Image 1: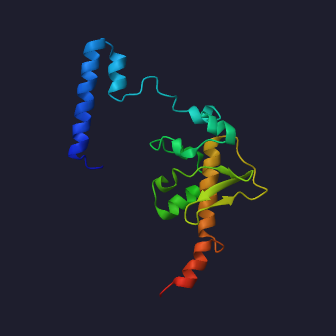
Image 2: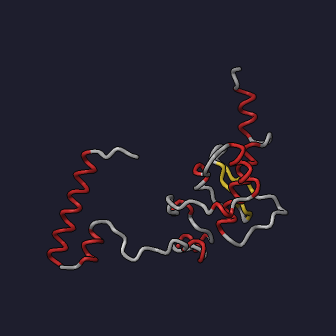
Length: 167
């Protein structure tokens, strides 16, 4: 849990005081909630599962969802784990895939791909792979592909390890 600084405490107290002042003036609970930072009419939690998720004009132009706008508190549905990911978690003795929660299937030059931060590039999905209809299943496939590529002897970091290893 992050440590709350004095400045953050001051900012929260000031925001709460402003919300009380507005609530007294307007007599409106909704206005007080908006000023206090609460979301009124929050979006459906399954919005990206039920819809294409292309909300902004930029997303509609490029034809895909901009992933960093996901709510990072939403964890993947572990019932959708691929057999490989289930075995991987069991072998590593992990309870979750938190380090992979922001990995999503995207597109690079018209081909399905997943972004590998280690090499700062896209890893394309092999040609014969059939993509699932559900976005969560696609994301699980992307996680599996990323792990397999990072464990592969063809990963660029393997060459760097050989070239610069000291021991």
